[in-house]
Length: 280
Image 1 (cartoon, rainbow, N blue to C red):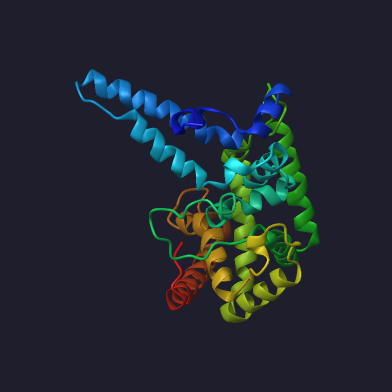
Image 2: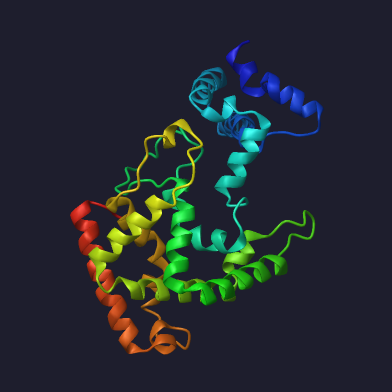
């Protein structure tokens, strides 16, 4: 099949799925790139410029062959999409892990980002251990309160068409922000002895690691460097909130002593990040 045709044509399993009325949303890049080539050619023609669309299609075809999404079945595609969007997680876990999404790899072997990163990527296998660690630091009573609140927020913000939770709206809800700030503050108060608590976090997550699902995760291990990257991402919004001196600011809600404690925490975290060559 010519490259131009294959750029537009679905693969065999997708043809079967289309006949069944389903499609893989992760294969949308194929159609999107094809539409872009056509759009680019039209706009170039309007400016009196010529574009060799066949060359663009050949390059796009070669690029798509490097992309693992072209080989996914519908069910695997849906599983990955749900996983990436946190749909498989209960509401509390979905909210708590939201700050870590930039650290999770996207669909396995996708090409590396153009901009170099200086933080290690995390595996989603850490989520059970992270939730166990946060629950231990919060205590069972507070954890139950936040779980119920998360479930209520999910029920409150349902998409009227699909009936599914509207996560962008949930995450932007002031109650969600307040709850997440409370969780961050309560967790960080346990880091007075920073090195000891980081070691505890590594041990806790390692002990509760989820089973291996992919070849890439088989030899992956959670380390101190991963823990530092995790804490940088987990506390990022709290660091920003320290500059808010309004009625909802950290000083007003938790007192000046907490502001001083958090400042010491971030100083220790930044020193550890610098030593480990990790950035948020």
